[in-house]
Amino acid sequence: MISVPGLPEDDAVTLLMNHCEEERKPNNLQVAQEIVEILGYHPLAIHQAGGYIFKNPPIQSFLDSYETEKRELMEWTPTFWDYKKIVNEEEQECVLSVFTTWELSIKKIANEDTRRKIERFLAVCAYLGKTTISESLIKASSASETNQWMDLFLRDGQWSSRSYSNVLIELRALALVQPIAGEPKSFLLHPLVSDWLKCRGEESTLVEKQQLDRASAAALLKTYLRFIFNDSAHGYLDTSAAIRESILLQVTSCEGNIEKFLHLSINSDDWENISETFAEFHESVGDYSNALALQSEVVRRRKIKLSPDNPDLISSQCLLGQIYNSLGQFEEAEYQLSKVQLQKRASSKQDISVLKAADNLIWALGKYAEAKVNLEQQTRALRSLYGEDSRPLLRNFRMLGWALANDDNLGDAESLIANTTAKCEEFFGENDLDTLTCYNAQGVLYRMEGVVSKAEELIRKAAEGRTNRLGRAHPSTLNALTNLSMVLASQANKFDEGETLAREVLSLRQKKLGEYHTSTLVSVVNLMRILLEGRDTYGRAYGSEIKELQFQAKLGEALDKGVWGADILDSQLGTTRLDGDLGVLLVFRTSRFGPKEWIRSHIPDWSKRHKQPTHSRLPTTYERVDLRTYLSALQQTQ
Image 1: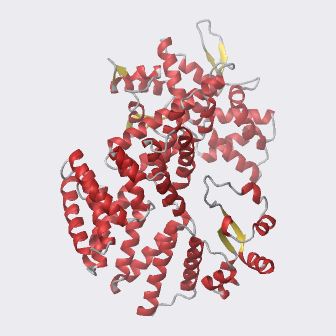
Image 2: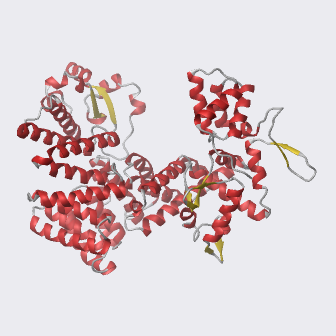
Image 3: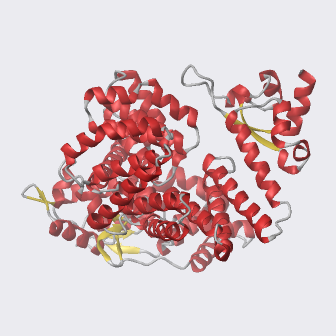
């Protein structure tokens, strides 16, 4: 079997248009580009699709038909079709469609039991998305996976890389998987192969089979993620950017099926564990919105069936609180912390993992005085559990040092963090994420003390190291870059570099988090202060840019405080700004924004869009409204 390479896009579009005989109008060409992409630029598939469109015009209807009838479409052939194959000793011909080609391929696997297991293995992989599938992903489940197809890769009950490689070699020879250059133990599934695998089976049991394969794919990925998280010092962040990107595509693909799990006989604990693992991954890479959607549902379900002091529920609420905090929704984060009295209950159970989860949330919320007490209490337990100079203990010391710094105890803080930094360098190396975090913390302390040269050296190390390990736009990288911009801008000969860096950070946060996220507003204020320094000290001219930043910062402050009276808004923002274009849009909390009667009459479908609170406190739904219209209406109602 010879694998046919995909065509270049222009050639693929030309082939499709020639066979379907549609006019080469711009809108037809655009649809043609979408079609050839879905078909993976496969020549036979494009030829076949062109014939189908010619028989069933117009071209615009093909995509909708393909989504609902892909099996029928890819098995359809014209009456006079050039692609045929001798399929048996009697030299009978089989008309080849795209799907029948792969059916013939897989039937070349002589052993029926092996073929059946390979069919199920590939069908599960089809639900992992259009990305790399590695040996490590499959191997992670070899010890716990109950699927019978896992026997393909085991020898004497243990994982066998040779057995895995042998299966892959056979599948490549049959053109059922695509090799990846430089990665002999990884593979890709052609998009059409994935569609074919999903459509295979008896019609009467196909839906049930698809549901089980979806669930198996999600469970497989969950096990792999837990392996990475538990086996690495920094969890997912110890993987390369390429691996994280591949995992994100796989997680997204599995999440597309997550609601369908509800129709399966899957244990609810499994569903929650899968969802929480996916949420944890989203949170670690800064994808907070998707993390929130998953984790809030996990907590809702666990609150129904678990007692308030259950460690699983507490850990889930801690993660949810951290996600809310990362989104800048501090009231919700505080609620998750206070509702279950996390620290007290975790301590009473002496569960160190839950204890740390609770403390991380306390830390994230900036409760440094409380965190300091907890960190001091944990030192003995961590030393006993993990030993002197262990990673958990050194992390504890670093956080304790920062808590001391926020308690204005800079001397003890500097000594503790410097000692921790030296040990992290010795035990883990300069490029370890814990070491980089120590560089950042120690550099900030130097900046607070006015030791600019040392501050720049350490913070630059942290920024460059995090950029290389995590990527430029990761929240941890942006934190270090923010600190670096402040240090650079405080030096006359490096002011321009600091300003440029501050602008870059603001732009990245605006794109990722939006205009009024707390982290974005921190960047707004940082850039505003740098520009003020440039104007007042170096005579730079920035036009109205400083005023624009001041307005955004004040508006963000007003939003954060939840004060919406016209007089307060007027004093916060200034009447001249309210008359300008920047005053047109306002994000607001409906529960605090004036008369609800006005809201209902001025916002279409308000009652449908307004979410009910999940607890007794006020809801925090956000909407957008014309500010000047609101102020005018508010004056008329008061």
